[in-house]
Image (cartoon, rainbow, N blue to C red):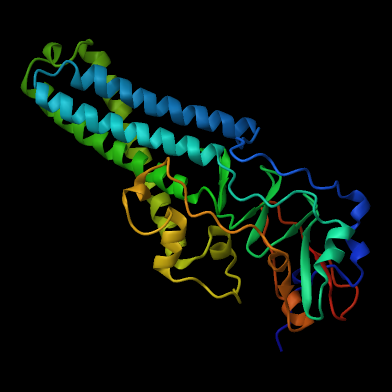
Length: 335
């Protein structure tokens, strides 16, 4: 007989007072539609600034070192338009991923009145996050940086200074895709420029001195190669998560999902906003917005206490759980 480790259990009580409603601040009024979401995290803000700086550095080298000094007007115009379009879409996707609410659960709604209004039936439980005092719907996880529970949280990305969740995963996927494309494009142009400069006089292939030109191109080559590898891997993992309807946290925990998974194509359409069209690649076109949470979305069904014991919820700052205080029917579970 396999024993379940003690830390797999939950600290469970039957009474709703276990939620400690006196410590929960009443939920604030809903924010007006279109209100900007921004996380005040020093590390995330610094990473976002570095991201913009690196893209603008690539713009500088591509335009003023390779394209403008080039004598091939058609080559310069075509590559300039393509590179600048991709860079614009990458930065726009970055802004949308950073400034879009990823799917935050209303804060402070774990009050006694709210629990009683759900009218729990036998076999039903609600899960409370003690960190933000919120009732957690299914597949929601707490982020210690955003200090909120996020629906379908995949991970917190410092490069976009935000969580990747239900509402902004499309923008994050587009950001990684466009960064990978401009990195590949820059590497190809650097290769052609080196060949061109080797065949001709270095003083004629750039408006900068030969040593400066070489240093700028090598730095761009290193940056392009690094970001091409990193963003390609991130793009692949995000597409895999969407197609399998499994977030990064769920995949890392390997927990058994009792929910019914959506089909791959349905999951992709919901993430990118409907049937296939050019809007899939448009960072200014949002995903298909989910329906507002109803009362039944806050409640989870269990058939026995063992189901609750084997249910682990992962947060960005997971704390060990205590042993259960009783083994009767559960009503409220503290995660």
